[in-house]
Length: 241
Image 1 (tube, rainbow, N blue to C red):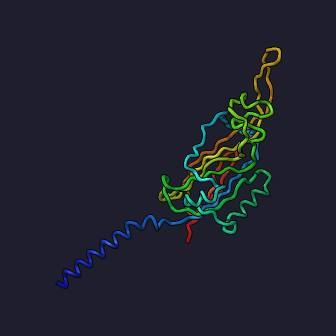
Image 2: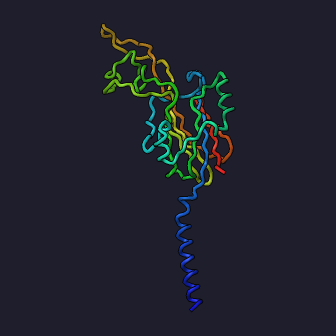
Image 3: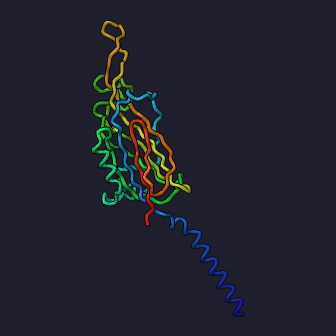
């Protein structure tokens, strides 16, 4: 009788432990601090031997979290950390003091160790707002009306200097998936009709977008540099003790 009671207790204890362990992974996801610096290289695109496309596919902003909305971030599992938590202030200062670089953002947040399907995707819009001078397709407001630019309305909205998405996810290693458009005012020749009905070429300003798309594997704790001819990202992923 006593042995039967003990056997039942052992079986019951095993079932309870199995139930707890089954629910543990969701609670035991390791946390990481993510520190990121985004910057522009101050070089004229025309000076580089690169083939820059005039049209780019739209960046997918579906199911992203705005870096400017703290409540939205926290709801998506991202906690912004205070400036005192930053450990790459020297790198940011060095970029600020260097004549060939312009820092655009310096962020730090905490998130759980999640795979690509579940890790948050953060949407950033930083730098100068060009909406007062250009339309979303890059055409100048000085030379074109909204209808001439192919737009249904002339509302300004926001047209940030750097805009895109950033995701840090984990799959044995840490990975960064970065997709950004850097907007730089340039000039282009446009064919126009004169009052006499003839064609002429006019030089006008144009806001051109330059794309960075990079998927990179990283080692935890190391500082990584994501390079591009016109911009760059410095990132460090640190496990929370």
